[in-house]
Length: 365
Image 1 (tube, rainbow, N blue to C red):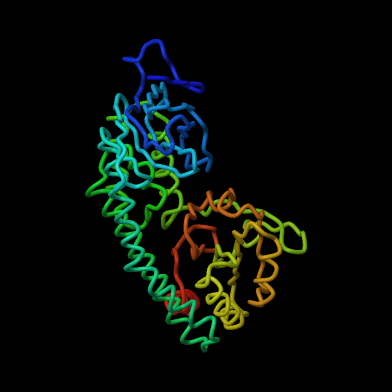
Image 2 (tube, rainbow, N blue to C red):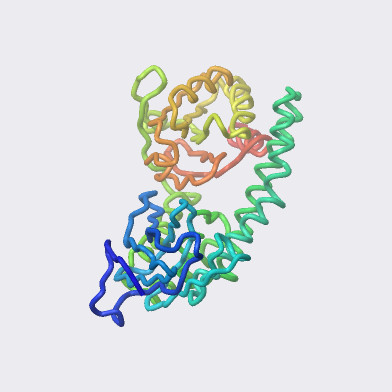
């Protein structure tokens, strides 16, 4: 068995390695180099932990001393095989024309749960999100009337909310304390079964003590609780399109809608049309809108703002999903908004359309 192990790999004590990957790859990639990368959700980064050239007959052996977590086996053609690997697991590669990328992987129940979750997630999107999204996009393209767009936008938002609740259910009911839980946490809905998710993370930490992903999920639960109803809204500060500095703090004393949006988010764009009307309706009240744009292009932000006639204060750091402002409010999907009271405490989340109008009417009656 001819091997070349280069990065983050230990040859000397195979039995003490954190986990191993062995077996063989299809003839088409035999003798070529494969990489094993670790994924860090928080840092949104990938790091190579192992590099191996398979033998001419396709045999592969990777012995890695690294923490449990989410990994990808990167094939020579750039294809990626996602893996959720626990301590001490021995994964086996077997050529199989019917398997994804023609490689079957066994020996990791955590990876199997991860794949089951991904399959369910895609099915849920296809059932709940894509149909209303397609209808909204089609209506937008043909210039449908505002009322129609508002109805279709609500259907997409409601569908996505139902989708995220389904993912919470699947995480709790089928993923459990497996390593795959870390990847599912990226899409958790903090408004649904949060106490159960927190308990699950505690169990995960007791089963997998001292590892990075356990700490990351604990911090995620803590951050969810910091954006719960009644919590103080996190500080926000940045530059407007004209370069002027704006802060959320300056809106204390007003009921303030903190709205996260982006040019590519069609429901966000539909909602922008309502915001102008709301500001006119409550011009004599202590009400304000403070928007945070999550485009990674200043041009896209400026163009969408002009088309939507965004006249209310807004800021952006043009970092897209890497924005620290999105992280401060656990924004992992759009649209997302928070209604803050005069003292800066969160009194409602994700009110849109008629629900937002009703809430404001109640507050200012």
